[in-house]
Length: 206
Image (cartoon, rainbow, N blue to C red; front, side):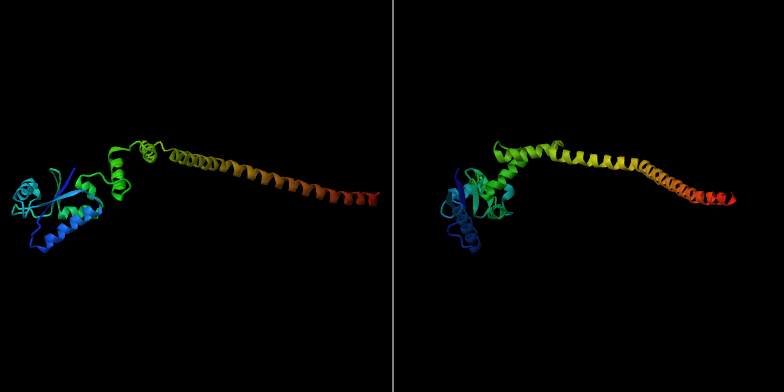
């Protein structure tokens, strides 16, 4: 696949020259093979470019200005769309080319592909897939464990609440038993104290 960049070598417009230099410089920096096609000196190039730029992409006067970028016969865009793609780190996608492995655009493209089509078979993606599938299906083990723990805690709280009155009654009974024991002990002590006095009085009577 050859990237075709239609240019006007003898353009008198400084803005057009700057845009053309920007596009070519960036393609060279990315090491993208391209073919510069001059529309100023070649009538065929100019006619082909004008015919193959989509109608909706042409200006109101119907004459597209350079630079115009194609991938073989497929239209990629003009300088404005190229600039937007550059800002979004999506130049290779804009050109219809696969991004170099390890590049930022390749990583972004991989993420987009996974989101759209599901994972490919490699270690990293498979792990992500398993996690995403389990979460989507509601079978995430960690979440299940958390839910079970939460239910157990709720049950314990309910059990404690239901047993609370029973425990209170038991505690009340224990207190009452202790008070009864103390009263009994006091009675016994009083009786023991009164007993000797009675015996002494009886001795005097005798």
